[in-house]
Length: 77
Image 1 (cartoon, rainbow, N blue to C red):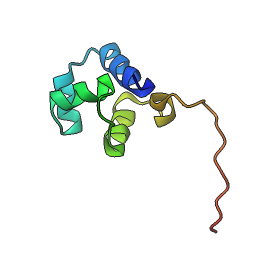
Image 2: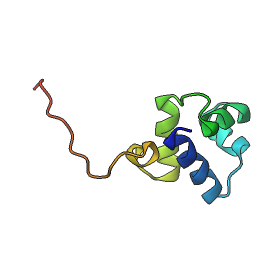
Image 3: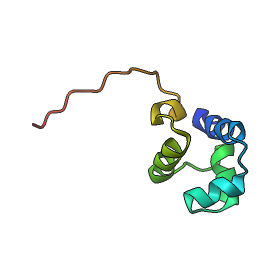
């Protein structure tokens, strides 16, 4: 299972929400939310951003990336 799949499931449960309630927030179906949570299908970035805003967490947290990771230098100015 993808690490983010478990995190989005845990966030939903911690906030006492059903898959159907999260589906409404994402503008998708309960079945689709279940697929994201089981790691059967990758979640679109727009849904990741929506969940970050809803749960007030960073994308790094949901994706399981280390906190405080430095950003790369841009080659454009």
